[in-house]
Length: 371
Image (spheres, rainbow, N blue to C red):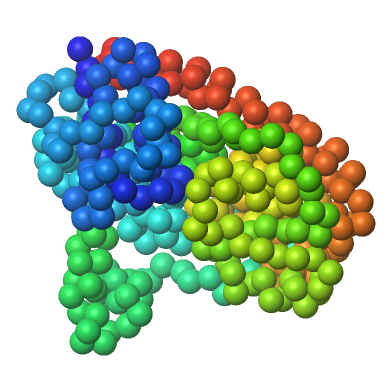
């Protein structure tokens, strides 16, 4: 009999913890013993009330048993060091949900490219792709690379930062040692699969998790309302406002799930201006509510296979990205018919995620229980 323990930042109400709670739910539904294990350095030990729709259990630590399997995300492996000591590498799974949030420098600065995730649909002419944004950080090289990287992440070498720099450096080294071990890898995005394949030289099992279905009825659309993620790329909004002053840009932030759904259901479109470290939930939640999506093609947003929302609505992240996005927003303001028709297939793809997830879970459980 196999038991699966899922290391989770319990208390956080974001896409990652919900995906991990869903994972435990799906395992238990299949008769597999499964539970969440709180990560050491995070804030809570109580699962948010919103996740009561899932069947889950919480254990403080993994019991000593030979059939235990550990699943953890890439975000902070050092927070699960006790669990990693208890479960051998061959029974450990790292799930890449937010690639660029990993401590690994090569993950932190990973960018999709045509070899691992195409910007355009299959057989499209890629010769016209413009030069992309040139100012993102690159991995550091040379002596004391890990310490210098840790200092960069902690805003420099100020004496008040020395303790946090040391902790960050330890986190980086720990993650680098872990991925050199013969652990297993899974992911919910083609972006993550491309990283694991091209950078780590490993295979990643695809587990395409899904977002909760909305619990609201139809809402009256506000034709000039454009929503964005208030925690990502907010500094870009003034540039868009200046170019399209007739649009009302409002953030999604500090809302319950039902409040997010109500906001999205009343919007003309959801605009993704941030970096997508995986198949983020807000674009898919918008699709479930029939709300069109416009996005900067960054991170997983670069990968057509992850976000096939239509060529015209995936804006290359260039120096003049705002000048490229503004006409698309004006088009939606004038007439949303074209974008709604263009994204019918994307909405159908998102609607099919629960079925695809169930099939993937069946295959994953078969793999876990037969090894």
